[in-house]
Amino acid sequence: MTSATKILSSLPAFSGGDVSGPTENVVIVGAGLAGLSAALRLTGAGRNVTVIEREGVPGGRNGLLVKDGYQFDTGPSVLTMPDLIADALDCVGEELNDWLELTPVQPLYRAFYHDGSQLDVHANPAEMAEEIAQVIGPSEAAGYLRYVDFVSELYRLEMTDFIDKNINTPFDLLTPNLAKLVAIGGFRRLAPKVREFLKDFRTERIFSFQAMYAGLSPYQALAIYAVIAYMDSVAGVFFPKGGMHAVPRALAGAAEKHGAVFRYNTTATKIEVSGDRATAVITSDGDRIPADVVVLNPDLPVAYRDLLGVNPWQVSRLSYSPSCTVLLAGSKKSYSKIAHHNIHFGRSWRGVFDDLIEKKQLMTDPSLLVTNPTHSDPTLAPDGKQIYYVLFPTPNLDANIDWATQGPRYRDEMVRVLEERGYRDFGESIEVENLTTPADWQARGMERGAPFAAAHTFFQTGPFRPSNRWGENVVFAGSGTQPGVGVPMVLISGRLAAERITGKDRSYRSRALR
Image (cartoon, rainbow, N blue to C red; front, side, top):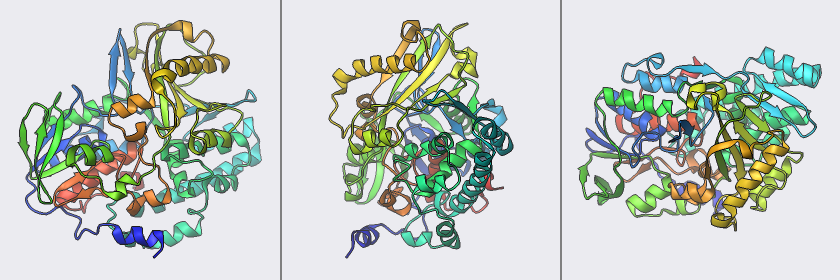
């Protein structure tokens, strides 16, 4: 028996896709985006929903830090596919515009390269083609337009059959779209597939770096992950007034308005189980909250180990994405040449992934992200001040790095690199700062200190990714389960979790496909 056959034979198969028994009273552990998406759908479907959250605010990884007049987002900084937020709100009859003020980010990204060139990324293909034609040349612009056609078709084929539905067994993948994905090269490696369209190193990098979100190198990842490039580089990037944390505040507010009960500053310590059935959630203050169904939004391996007290082999065998170190800086200095999101590529490209994934060491030639939220919303900082969200990819905690001692040193190295890349006097201009290392991510409940969860290798994707079901009535939501990592994916995972309880929403169709 091959290893693939062993994995296939061990995967659970669920009849009908629904949990068994009564489903009237649902307790959701964790008010992250996936838990909030599930809460809205379950509340709209008439369930009694209680959400337990250890922090004093909703958001989970999409957290908030307020310090000396600065409002820092501590988690994701890029928002794409807001129709998924609108759909969740629609489940309780609410309109997106009544809860969030979203501004399109323009340009989506500004990319800076080692040779001194820069490239602005636009969602409008014609505008982007013109940018590429001016910076690189008309033949590269033509290749880009062919690439847009490819990733748009990729998205259309993937979304309905492989992302936007519960997958119980590998046989669920056997659809006409699977053959079409194979035919267009979706199961080839991403980097060579991108190079079929894009010949210049600048376009190749800006349209393949998204593989990092999946925990993979573009040289390892399958071409199907170019769908992530579609989600932000073609579908568009947005920023909410009030920062990224405005999203969980809106989702929680709408759910609470329609009857969901939120218990903040409450930590779940154990799921009470009788046989294969969860019966209650036990909290750190000794409270017992009875439940017909439990939805677990914490990082999946942590939820299994710390709340259910089990460690299935499919979970224990997982390999994890690289991590990152994030420096949040409140600064008195602004930089006129940057946009909202800025990617600074080093000279090396393959070397970045060799360092992070193969060698498990810090980047020797860093590529990094700098987000300037006050570029779009100045109210997030005191008058005349700026916020910088600086992200350097790092290995996860499988690497032999002592972050207790390395963290402060790496913070200084991050500042040095920033100043070398054009952010003059960055260090001395900082008024308020906060550093998050892989060790900090783990302390916040992320296995191996990896905020991007389990890597999307072939055998950790789709039906091979840990299921969102356990026992008779426990459902998982979040990036550790299907469909995977990223704000759009975790919002979808909340809907898929809700459908395990209510049954498939036959009226639902991804708004992005309309």
